[in-house]
Structures are given as C-alpha cells and as structure tokens.
Amino acid sequence: MKVVWPLVLLCCASTSALEAQVNITTGQWPPYLDQTKQDQGCVAVVIRDVFALSDIKVRFLFMPWERAYQEGMKAAYIGSAYWYYSEQRSKDYIYTQYPLTEETARFYHHRDLAFTYTSYADLKPFRLLLNQGLTYPPSMLEAIETLEIKTSYATYTSKNVALILRNRADIMVMDEKSAKSYQQELPAQEAQLLVAQAVPAFIQKGYLLINKHHSEYVELYNEGLKKLWGDEDYVAQYRARCSRVFTD
Image (cartoon, rainbow, N blue to C red; front, side):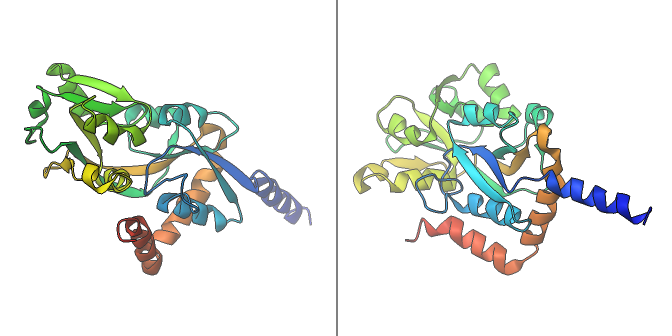
C-alpha cells in the first residue's frame, strides 16, 4: 500500500489539471476556420476531434488575427489556432508537433492589371495588400523592405478581395483555398475579375499554438493528432471537408 498510493495520487492529480472544456482563439480563414459555418471549418473539426479523444470540449473564440494571437497567450485560453511558423511565435508559444495544413499562397489581382509574378522583385511597381497578424516568409518581408515595395494592411481577410476590386490596392497574397472561398461569396461578374498568378508566392504549414501556461495539453494534443493522421479514412474525410465548399 505504501508504494501504490503515491502512484494513484499522482495519476489523479495529473488528470484533474485538465479542463472539461478549453478555449482557443482564432480568426476567420475559410474553409479552414469559418465562424459562419456550423462546424466552424474543417480545421476546427480536427482540433475538436483531437481533444474529444480525451473527453475535452473545445470552444473557439473568433477575433481579428492580431488580437487572437495576443489573447491566446492569456491564461484564459490554452492557445491559438492556427499559425504558420515564425521564430518569434516559437518564443511566445509552444508549437505543436504535426501540421494541420499545408497551404499554397498565391498573388491575386484584378484581371486588368498587367502583372506576371516570377520573383518578389516583380512586386515593386505595385501596391501590395497584407493582413495584420498573419505570417509571411522572411524572404518576402526582406524583399518588401529592400525593394521598398509599397504595402497596406487590412485587419480582416474578408475585406481583401473588395479592396483589390475597388482599386484600394493592386495585389493581395492569400492561401488559394481561402481566396477561392471569398471569391465564391461574390456575384459571378465580380468573382471573374479576380485572377491568381500561376507561380506560388510561398507554401507554408499551419500549426496549433499552445499557451505556455498550459503546457499540459501539448502531449495530449500531439498524440491525438498523430492518431487521427494515421487513419487514412479520417484524412480522406478531412480533405473532402476542406474542399466541399468548392463543390456544393
């Protein structure tokens, strides 16, 4: 008994540290995270499924991306979903082990704009629209500074297409699935005005960030996502869910 009791108490103490429901900050990024949909997006479904393996419910709090990042570091939240890698973010949060997405970002513009992308230098004559709080590759940010490329920032990605079509900026950069989601919300005549460059701007992977105050969720999440990604049927369903918006 003297040997067993401490082990039992240790087990129970570890389990009780986990909440029955956790809060995660996020931003609008369809089809991956979408507050207008009942399931809140295909990535939201995966994150909920991971925590459900441990009988934990997830509540997503949607807000502008920069605010989501800052709020996610507060003790009221276990983290923020989901983010591309950056050195600063690896200091502020704990990056989880496995990516939720691999996204191809492209440059988009009005079809009447004479623009062909081969390298970041091609952006120099134009006004580039970026979004506050989102992650861009260091090589692109360095080119913007070195070449003195004119930039403007939007708070909400949902405003990007309108800003381009109304000549408030010349070019935007966005994940191709997200851009297509926003494009499909437009009247057909307007949707046809937005075109994408064939050469990708960059390719990045997205991860759930865990708040350093709540490191007890890291292993649980990593093991859960590893289990789901090991299920071929689940992965196929996930990919179909992320693409369904374009076929409905």
